[in-house]
Length: 89
Image (cartoon, rainbow, N blue to C red; front, top):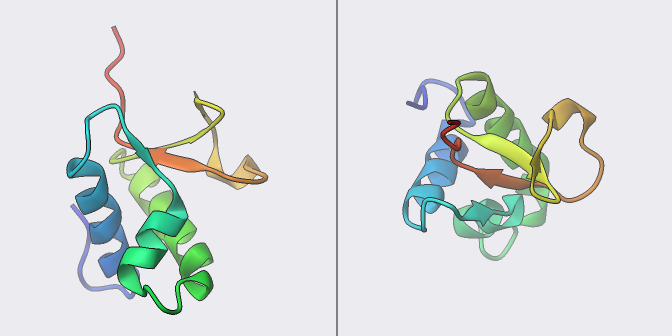
């Protein structure tokens, strides 16, 4: 659960809300979150959204993917997607 005491908590909440409002197998783009938070001035939020996603990854609440594969966000270059963790069998 996002910690409401830090500045990025709203973005963490928005990431989880967007993911939970879609099919369990869906992904979202960081720009989806930025646009939801600030429709008229979303571009400055792109790095804060990635930072919020990184905190959620650290807590095991989301995964970051590129081309459908889970990756380490620190190593990501280019577009990423965010998704809820997939169950492994």
